[in-house]
Image 1: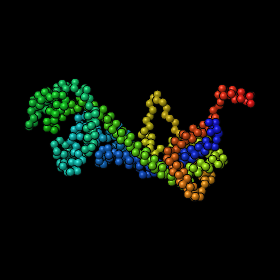
Image 2: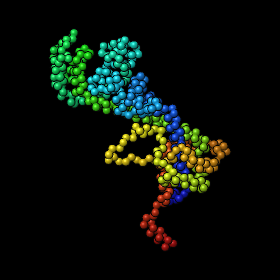
Image 3: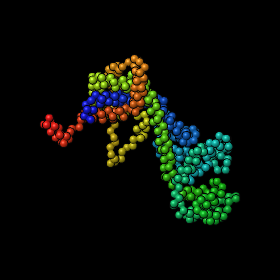
Image 4: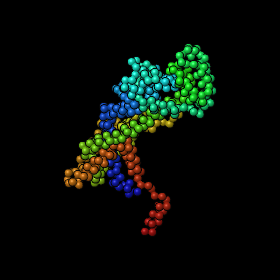
Length: 431
């Protein structure tokens, strides 16, 4: 181990990690500029929301909501917190009613709003309400069938079935109270409240009561208030909101994974172009560092300058193409919370990274001619691909590795133990 710590091999490794760190920082900065100019994150989020919500109309309505629209001053947001998404979605289901306080109203809106399929077929009334069933609310926005199915499943997942059975008698008493209230006293053709209340009393469980109340005309006070009481007994609104947040977070996790893969492809492509223009072929660089002690010394000095705190370096994080905006993903630490991890010291800007690379220009200029023969050309191209793959990992990865290797070299070989020292002394005496 001691031989490795004092050999040129470790110094070559330090030089390569320095080059990867500088090129990785530069490539990440280039990618970030391109991602901002072409709104890559915002476009990916818009496509993901289109798939999640079922159509572009519903997606656009969510993005134009006041809570969401204000997240970006230049256009579509690149990230939406889960709680704001839930509030905007429920506002959309409420048809501009500024949120819903009761689960029954949410389900009523879902049942009343026409589906996008029916809206596309023109099977809605002149006022925009659905003709089928006569239960649609005038002006209710169309809701994709996929979104209806998803929210219905989330309703079922939010049901408190263990407690619902104990509330059957309370629901029956509530239905009887509503039937005797002035709001339901007005006679309605074809409705016999006494028979309905009697059927509710004999109905088995909440499902039976619900089926009985659904036989009443839409909008009847007993139907609306009775179903609301059943929903209050079966559905936990907080759990429903939480389930929507979980559903949305799962989308964000998949989107993050897809974006990371896409970002790595872009970083690899940009890295290959940068490596080609700079002549940063890994095998050629390694050979030049190994045979040129002066260049190794220059590389080690630069690496040590980065590894040690310096007033010329600012503690700023290397741009990460897969990170969410810090203003949205970095919550304020609570009282007593551990301090956040310190950012990695890196070049404060792209110009400084380029300046360091300029100082390393003799390393690139001393590389071998790749056109000597076909074997040299093959090794050169393979080195370019290896460089592109290495710097696509990002500057942070190579900075951390560079610091560890520099510290390992500075620590030197491990001192021998007492027993080893005694053996060496005895061997010296006998020799």
